Amino acid sequence: MKIIKSGISLSLLPFLCGIMLNSGAVFTAADWLYSYTQKLTNSGTHQAALVTSAFWFAMTGGRFFLGFVTAKYSERVVIRGSIVSSIIGAAAMVLPFSSIELLVVSAILLGLGLAAVYPILIASASNLFANSRGSVTGYMAAAGAFGAIIMPALQGWITSATDLGMAVLLFCTLATAATLWSVPISTPSR
Image 1 (spheres, one colour):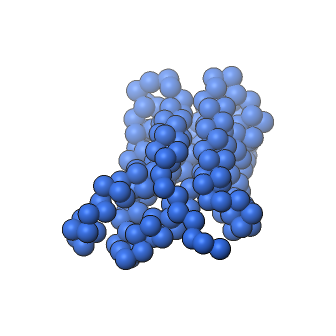
Image 2 (cartoon, rainbow, N blue to C red):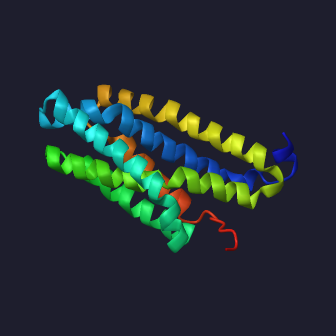
């Protein structure tokens, strides 16, 4: 509990919320894109699997190229670009008239947008709280796991009780945006 005694717990809260919401959005998309695609577009299993694969391809590619992009642009710029991309992807995904092509493009935008958030937040929080790096990283990973547990289950409840589609995914991306817009992303001197 050293981190709480050091007085940085409130400063860490936006990071924890941001990573929880980001992980919630990632795992909600991963868990629900397949069935959502089938339900919305009446598509076959191969097309629904393509949408999910497009999301994970974009996530993987986004994380791979993150190092190259942050070498050219600051983490703050990358986070803000990620926010815009994920909101556009999630918003297009919840349109009630989506086609399989629109869902693939939406999944790619969403995956690219969500890809950078987790690693940048972990690195920034570790830089900001360098004296408590181990504790901070553990708290951040736990907050991410909490989002991955809660948000897909909430999406399942909403899906069974309402006709709101991927409402949790859109909520997570919008709430992540609101949280991260003002988080002090720290960039070490280069």
